[in-house]
Image (cartoon, rainbow, N blue to C red; front, side, top):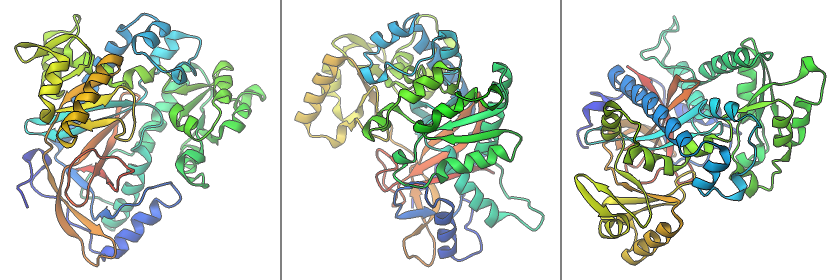
Length: 444
């Protein structure tokens, strides 16, 4: 076992005083019928961060998200201009509301960057800005188990954490007031893209909202007309867009009912403009720097973003040098990652050191032709110690894991941190479809 990085703190939280199989069964029960992929290792305790590290993560997230938003919106003055500048596929040219001010105002309501801890601290690899991002439900379910296992007889816990559902509910309340609509929230999604028949993934949050002073309902797209084609007092003026267009297209789900709801006054956040913020091209633009950035903003980018450039047949900077990006990317394969502008769950990502040279060169040249990919400096992640439970294990064991941290931000407020990792201690592209594990992060 290596020495964990001080950023993660001195030691992990010890597993609870119950048998490991009981912990595993509780974690599996909390996530039943949610479409969770198989996880060969489950956490035996919550992942803990010192308060100073936790605070740094959210300070940097808030500041960088602001830069991401401003950069994406400055690419062009209109939606049409941005669609052209980002070379968005035809599939993304839909689900905008007519009012561009509304589009821009509510694009970043729900966000989660992907962060690894490098040799000098947090490094932000990308920003996921979408109502459909992973993390809120996963973290909430893990936290429910940890609260049950660690609370003393007076309900006190040896750690603290925000509740993702509570923070998102507060976001909805504030947005309803801002929009002048009744506190009625439509959660729009589909169990079909969860890979299960159960709607429990959506029902848990619906129940929470209904039990905390709001009226909420889950809508499959086929039922969404009921959110607006009804008496005024029963209409839903606000909702969460808990789906992505690519997922629905892959599952043959029609998006037309969503456009109809938007056209009839049901605002779904984050708006389609969030796609520009999520595009990895925006990370490249932020990293390269914009004329309007202050010296403090440039220093922030230098500290927290790995070198990232939109790949094309052009010149840019590497440190103090001017370089031809294509030649540089081909020659520095071992230290770079190639990512398409749009992509999810670790797809469309090539780590240079893991790709044959000929394949890397061909991929770089092809990506430069389209101008819709980035090259990014590879960050070697640091590790932390975490107890995990393997399948059929009777005892937990400790392993050094290299987590990808996902600080959740709803309506500008910190909503907890979602962590993904490989329980066998390996590193690499972490996605929930690749036998990776997940956990909730707490503060100690």
